[in-house]
Image 1 (spheres, rainbow, N blue to C red):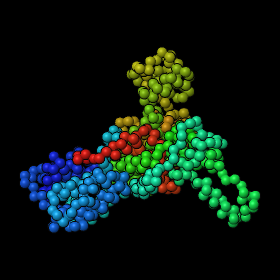
Image 2: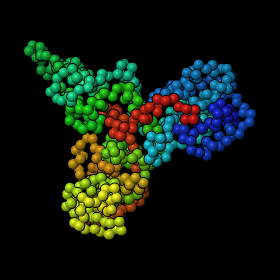
Image 3: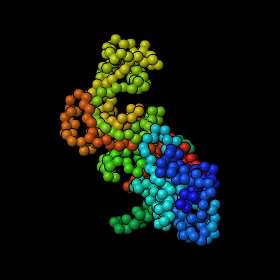
Length: 544
């Protein structure tokens, strides 16, 4: 088999077996790939008959590969990482085993990266558990070569996701902004507020105009004149009116700032404080890098996420419930604080609990409840907590001097009874995992009024959780929305198993598809982007 022999030559050339043929440089054993690796590494005198170059090769094959490598930039990848310059300079009529090995290495590397990403996600998300897309890339390459459609088959390896497509479509626009010099930045200084005047306001206006977040004054004025010509002829007095001053923080600019804050998931106040200034001053080149990083995150997803599944985008404070690829429910979410972050992982939801008791994690009991009880001992009973000793015996909280209870060796277990003040609210949706993270209601529903919602200790709190519970139980016989609410009307904890598990994915995307604008950038809540961006800028090693 010519490809097997060529891969053997490639193994010798790179000093080992051709592990690049594994999807996404995942070095875990793959039986399908291993068979070819064994054949390659066991060949003593490989017949390295060229298949990309020479009289016997199909001339269009290498040309098609070069076209595909050029197109890899649309996926946020660097074509030079796949030997574009070297392969563009090749005379495919002349047989060259070294070039053939290079071309094979390029196509298998690009195929693996499109299939499942350049990196193992665990490198950046240690808790990652979602299965990665896999394929026998050697067999794939045999078929692609036989059919002569390498470029099309490489494209087909990329994620078939509307979000991925939206990011690809947006990438050229932001690359063009970078090529044109980017957008202006805003000088450091005090908070900018509506009514302020000065050169920093003009910088703010120019920044929002350059990114398409604000209509330029000149265009707005022209549009106003045209509307006036139709509706109300311009009088000499109105035609001599002064144009708007770019250095004035007017109501239109305030609206644009608020829209930027809303989209970025910042607190919406119409003022440019430190957080908003930071987001505004991220250059167009950073936005390009951000798109590329999130394209990579999409490539980490499994091919089959489940016919019915749930996705939480942590920095966007949002949840989607999907069936057959269609978003059937959207919910606002509250996620973990920066120092108690919600982990990125996946698991299967198997049951829900109505009127849950809250078994308070020890870390939360020490950090949150103990200081509260020291200030206000009556809160123990008022909030519905039970106190148990290490043997599980109930302890009368009135007999405890909380100011003498040590945090380091906290001797009690806390649990909160079902009720209107219960931290979990009326329902929790469980996907068993080692982090003890789940979806749940909350007694602090006023927090959903905020746009930036990182208040939890890691769990995901939901707005309108019963509506999501209705969706979750839709395919479980004997469970109905009416039945859930009848249970909730009482105060007895009730566990309800699901007929089929529902996959839940807690993800981290900072550039997402937006139906109205095409793409939306989100503030990097847990500061995860920079590490991935830096890694993507480094040329892959031969083993990737």
